[in-house]
Length: 223
Image 1 (cartoon, rainbow, N blue to C red):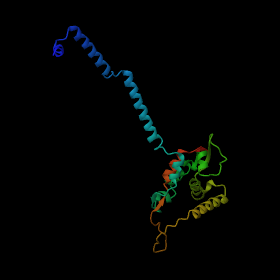
Image 2 (image 1 turned 30 degrees about the vertical axis):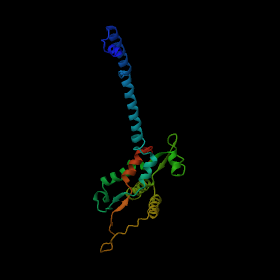
Image 3 (image 1 turned 60 degrees about the vertical axis):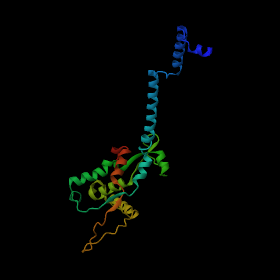
Image 4 (image 1 turned 90 degrees about the vertical axis):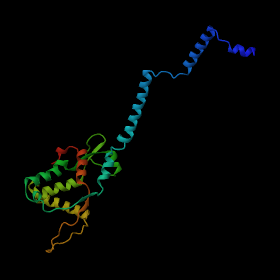
């Protein structure tokens, strides 16, 4: 009972002061430390670095195809095209027709491109003797070579020095047509004239031309 009575006795002012100091020390030890400005800056820097890594992974490395990827996609037949034979602006000898042919030949650097050597190795191409810049060499997309020959032989034969060159161009086109035989079955008119037939599934020439222009080399050096 004496012990209990002692516990019920009011504490002295000294004891209260000691208890108050102890409580304050206890609260200081377990309270959350204040967030200082440098800590906030460090956390922000970490978040920025993480965002940059994510951007580099998902945007720079994934959505930007290499020259190898681009070329591989060009070979796919994914572009439906209906042939036409009644475009007056092209079948007549007009300035518009001349501009059209110039655009798909001279305006496309005649298909001349500068390609990295890793590309050459990937597709097992014959080595080109014409070097452009260190690590690259010159090649020509043959479709533009063929178009240029058609233009010279049939539209502007005066640009060729003699008839031999004209026949040379025509024979080159013959070989190309026989190599890439078109098996489309055209229906016939009543006079047995061949009609253009159903749409073909073609390669996207506009995409090919964009690829050529993206990798074009010395377009003005070739006539």
